[in-house]
Amino acid sequence: MSDQVPPTPASDPAASAPPPSGAKPGPNPAGDPSKKMVAGILGILLGSLGIHKFFLGYTKEGIIQIVITVVTCGAGGIIGLIEGIIYLTKSDEDFVNTYQKNYKGWF
Image (tube, rainbow, N blue to C red; front, side, top):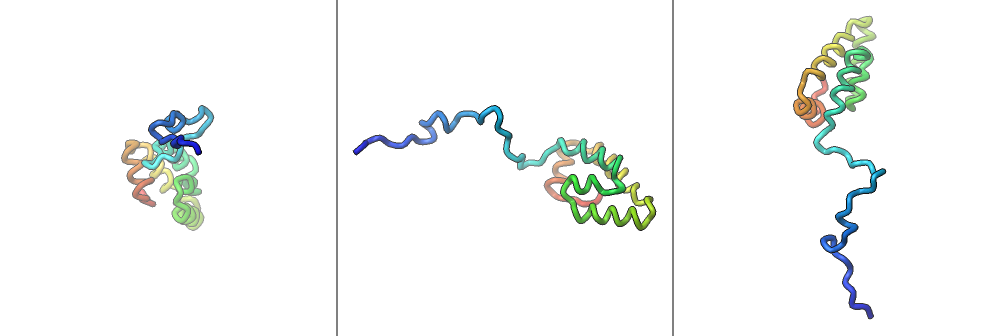
C-alpha cells in the first residue's frame, strides 16, 4: 500500500498556475463596458432597425423598434439615434449598471 496523500490545491503548483496563453478569459460577471461603444455606434447608424437592441440582448425591444420604424415610415428611427447618443455619453459604470445589470430596455 502506498502512504502518499493526494496533493491539495495549496500544495499543488498546477492548481495556482495561470491559464495557458491561448485560453480565453471567462465571462465578466460585472458586465462588459466595451459594448458601450459598439452599441452606441450601432444605435446611431442602424438604430431604426433596432440592431443596437439585439446587440445588447433586448430581442423584444429590437422587434418593437423595427415595427415602430415600419409603422412610422422611418420616423421611428430617431429613437435609435437618441439611444446611441445616450449610450455614448454615459460613463462605463453607468452603462453597465443601466443596460447590462438592470436591463433597462428604453432610453
